[in-house]
Length: 196
Image 1 (cartoon, rainbow, N blue to C red):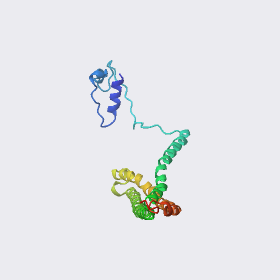
Image 2 (cartoon, rainbow, N blue to C red; image 1 turned 45 degrees about the vertical axis):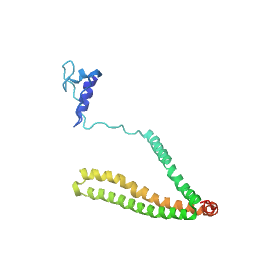
Image 3 (cartoon, rainbow, N blue to C red; image 1 turned 30 degrees about the horizontal axis):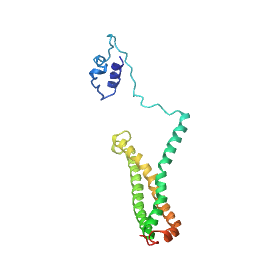
Image 4 (cartoon, rainbow, N blue to C red; image 1 turned 120 degrees about the vertical axis):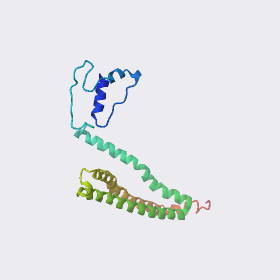
């Protein structure tokens, strides 16, 4: 009886067809019951919903727990990039000397600047595209173009608000670490010691 119910539930969703049941599963005899009918021949009650329930809403008392979990995970993901920004200038300076640190800073500045500008412009373009479509162009709200623009804006908002500006901070942090450690690099790098 469960298999027949599962097949009817699956068939209730538009475009979904029931797959044939495997012969050895014990569910195959139940799969041949016609839609809208029980095993005993009585009509099956029809339950209609406007749309299927996908997920339960987050209860108010659990919102803080969800927020705390996502914040903790985001902070853990940021440990490695932060450590890299602090350690790489020191490692390059100790191995390659002052010239190596200058090369690292010039490369970081040029690529960081270009990628930050790209992210700010791309994020703004995605945001403006969504607003343009919402004004009635290309079908307006609810159209396929609007759905695609919403997906694009989901990527665009972090681009223009967080990822692009964070690259500026990365360039500044690498520069400050290099300035603070300049004396150490000048005196004790492998180049200064004559090893490299």
